[in-house]
Length: 432
Picture 1 (tube, rainbow, N blue to C red):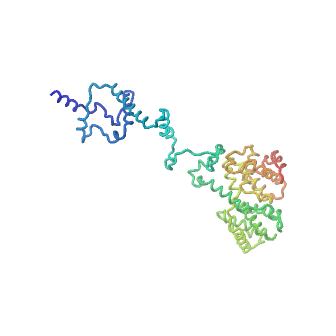
Picture 2: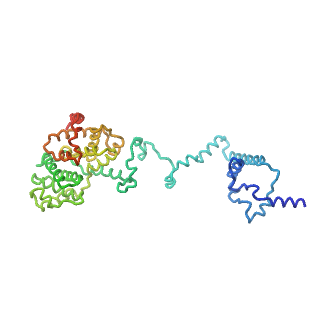
Picture 3: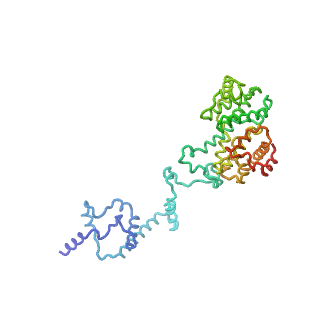
């Protein structure tokens, strides 16, 4: 009878008297210090004892599980702690046995530390690394071509804030400018390409000065003027023409450039009128076909204006510096001795000189990176630009200087900095 009553007391004990060891609802706080030890012990148990174990309150198998459990009412908390510590010692001994006979406890700890990543390492793994499947850190060794250069640490990402503007194509704008630099080398203009021809460099300068006036009168885009000069030079070095056809080449080149750049290009009759009927529509059309065949329809040579806009963005310059750089660039299109320079080089030198004259701003690492020219590389060309500035003061061909003396261009050609001591010193060092 007594045994039967004890059995009933044990089986009818409330199930909440003690949380099952396999339960994940163990409270770990200051009031339940044993909960932390219980949780740690359960984590260290083999999967065969944890993975398939369910709570004691399961209806299906509660009967045989309860009958298999015997609980000693006199069992205290200290005994539970002792049992837990014994289980921890058993787990530790098992790990030590699995290690090599010559391995010490220190070696085992180091091995476990290496095999399990730290919390900080896990935090440093980005979402992109997980998606791409390579959480390893970037190799920044200098012998790798794709390594991040130490010099780029001072370079600003000027396209960082343009990702939301699809027109600025920030994802591949650097690839575009790299391709443009390849194109300017693909379509070079040789130095002194008019030697032995009937046309001279002076005739070319007179033609381009006149075309600057025509361009201004027709209110055409700036790109149209630069492309016109590029077409003229590339055509004349491949197909020499007599003196009486030079003006025809000029207006036809501007017609082609207008069709390429303008939204509404001038008509052929407009160019006939501007030449005072020296040529007819038929002449212009025939010359247009000849120029396009000679150049193989290659109109894609980049312009210095394209590179200047990129450099001005990289330097964060104001409108006055940008306008002065445009003035310096436009002075070069008239000069026959400047035809061999790449557009990117002229744009970089013009902006570098503009910054130096207006407020003495230095050519930064960011500008050097995006322009691909250092200030030392640009120094000879800047000296030539200073010579052109001094020459423009007394030059008979005044179209460019007059154009930039207007309020539309901030009267930049008449500013005092262009007559200062810095320009004179740099021009005196020029070998032009």
